[in-house]
Image (cartoon, rainbow, N blue to C red; front, top):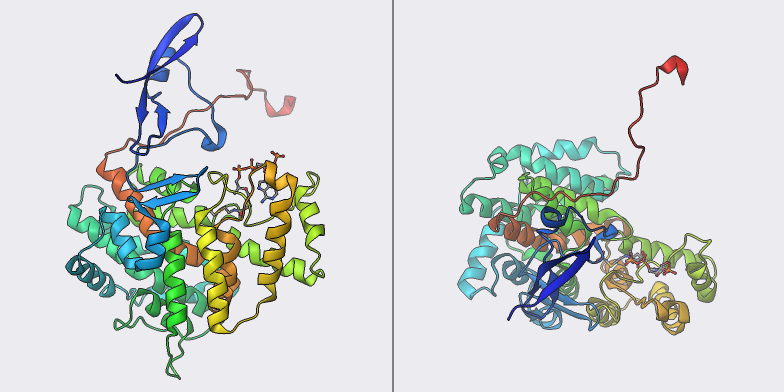
Amino acid sequence: MSEIAKLELEGTIYEFPIIEGTENEKAIDISKLRDTTGYVTLDTGYKNTGATKSAITFLDGEKGILHYRGYSIEQLAENATFIEVAYLLIYGSLPTQLQLDTFTNNITKHTLVHEDMKQFFEAYPAKAHPMGVLASMTCSLSTFYPESLDPNRSPEAKDLTMLRLLAKLPTLAAWSYKNAMRHPFMYPKNKYDYCSNFLHMMFAMPTEEYKVNPVVVKALNKLLILHADHEQNCSTSTVRIVGSSQANLYACISAGISALWGPLHGGANQAVIEMLEQIHNDGGDVDKWVLKAKDKEDSFRLMGFGHRVYKNFDPRATIIKKACDDVLEQLGINDPMLEIAKKLEKVALEDEYFKSRNLYPNVDFYSGIIYRALGIPTEMFTVMFAIGRLPGWIAQWKEMTENNEPIGRPRQIYTGATPREYVDIAKR
Ligand code: CMC
């Protein structure tokens, strides 16, 4: 027998169905609430609101569990390639060798961007933040593929847009860096795998042979997998809500990139390194900065700490911390930021303020240290997150459009002025 939730309002009892997910998560289905009662719910920040049903990613914040399509993040990060995970997220199952080869080839042949786009890059100031460039360039892709504006295209045509995005985002990302450095753009090389190609476009120069370091490729592959999806977070919800208006996929992904940029979301990875550098330059007194983070009069927060959903530990942070030690050791790098990060983590984890609020290091706490070790400049960290998150955004958009979800349009409780008469400007 299915369960029912009862709500009493002004003496009347209303019944709402309880729905249950495959991992036994329960929700009260209030889709008929306003029609039957005239009431809406108020949930600023959507802390209690399920915006959709989704079969892509499961996470249990209390237990620190993260699964993509049923596979644990630990197993995927250890065994899979990023492209394999992208296929899994978008199409729902792990690819066979043939499916993987076809998918890889289809991505590889679209890695070039239109030559005219190079002129857009040249118009940006050298100091342009690469996230601003990436968001604009991603939206600009729609102008080269006007057929993508048709929401009723065939599934094959939609697939082509997804492949183009997966193929071109690393090119646009690497070129935004090259442009900032005023270095010549490096064209993609189709002989490389996804991660090697990105590294080649970032770090090669036309004057010299570039050797891709397999340690770096492996680390990058793992980082991208860890970022590939995270259910209904701020940027993914943005992609879904923009997509719900039937805006084209390039515009949706561009909106997701913009949402990711904020320091409370993907921008935290850049903010963490800037914070660690600040602490280091200030003499490395970790206790002083922990005190600042606890002081309600001080706007400083420990960046890379806390999460809306994870209230025990972030499984991605556990994997990244270990990868961080491995990468630094293998590359022979001694980074003082890692020492500060470890001290900070230890002090905070033993502190009552952080313990009582369930604040733990999140995925961004250690990822920046690996990116630094790989030679990625700080301003590019959030761009790396965007490359990793792209398959998740695409999968979520695909699921939403295939389910014909209605346009996203929350309600509000109006708290402004009640009706009043217009006053002539001379009398105000
Ligand atoms: N440092 C100090 N205090 C904190 C922190 C922090 N990093 N995070 C939360 N708190 C405190 C906050 O002041 C509040 O205290 P009180 O109950 O006394 O008012 C309490 O903990 C709850 O915080 P909240 O802001 O209500 O929690 P939230 O779920 O709305 O925010 C968060 C989650 C991630 C935005 C927040 O923890 C934060 O700002 N963290 C730092 C930024 C960061 O690392 N973001 C990356 C998130 S992981 C990558 C991603 O997926 O986006």
